[in-house]
Image 1 (spheres, helix red, strand yellow):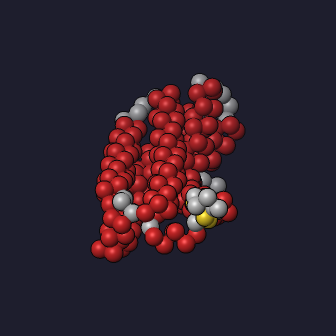
Image 2: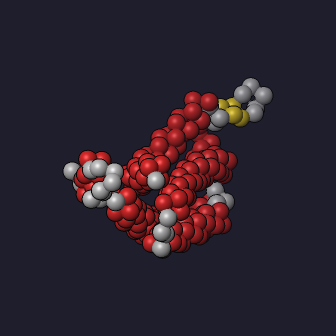
Image 3: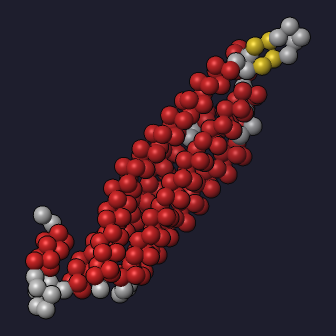
Length: 213
């Protein structure tokens, strides 16, 4: 049994007129836990920044740049990578700010609001990245389809000479793209999901504590 659960159960066993463990002691324990969780969210975001940097260094080379130029996505790739770092850097700053602010929080209601804000920020960040990955995937797909000569082999030519893309091929690509988005969601679930779940539990405990007061 962890320390917070012990304090809560001990508090419930005591008489109302002679509490051995006060609500303030429980609040301090929840506050300490929440501060630690927000610190870990900050650390995870920094780890993610380093991880994407390593991936970009390992995957982007002269051959990659030439392939991007061939399908007219050279400038797009530069802008998307820069945007990725700007957005991630912005969220790292927000996570750091939330962590520093929660350390000086001295009221139950303020701490509850801070927890809600952190959860919303993380969820928005994850949703943004999932949507961005899907949109970028579609852009790259259609750019390759129209500008990469290799893709001409899969085009269907009608009797009037017009060409079209096989629906099965489009469905296969979108299915694969959705699978990649799902895998990225699992990655974020692993990185942030446990921390957010614990923050949610802290929020519920704070809500119970406020109702008792």
